[in-house]
Length: 91
Image (cartoon, rainbow, N blue to C red; front, top):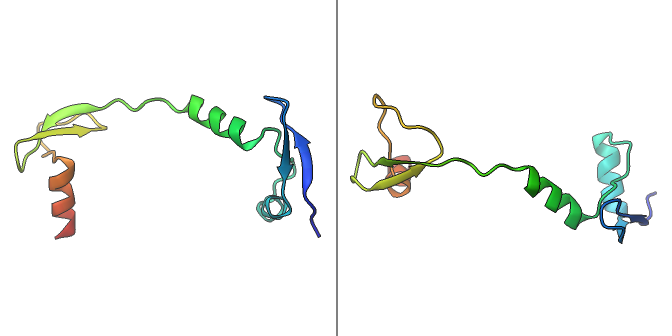
């Protein structure tokens, strides 16, 4: 039903293949527009939009080591380093 199509990336101008499998996936999801960018340009665009996550440093409530966490620690809640958190989650 679907056949591979060669499209031109609007970002870099290079040709890329819109495969039959990708077309089928787009149809299943209800997408009506063909992709306008090649995979490399799509990935670069996604990564440029992502903001670097702010990390905070706290003292692990279990081992006393340094814990790097993606949220501001609160005094009323314990914070655990990655290793201690994994150990607790395993129990």
